[in-house]
Image (cartoon, rainbow, N blue to C red; front, side, top):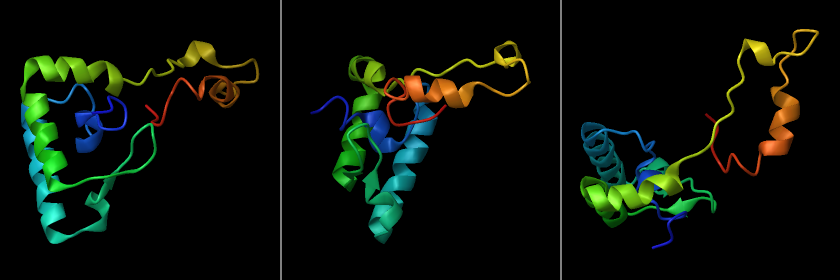
Length: 114
């Protein structure tokens, strides 16, 4: 299993802070969508690009996240650093510097925004 492309959090499209109830709910929702053949459930975004998703992938992801050791192993690969841009980070003219900063940190942010 590739820890980036096949991470259970990516397969279920959940953050590493997801609770057991959220994991169960999202897994069941994805399984229902896959059973109906909906195109929105057929793939998931990952740092390696869009990946195909099957019902078996969803079941394996749910099982992996129910095991504390396997979940702990997956969490570091599902974490995306975020920028903390508060009011003190504004420029002199009041414009946000986020546009300038994003160009420099885009490789660090991987594939998601906060």
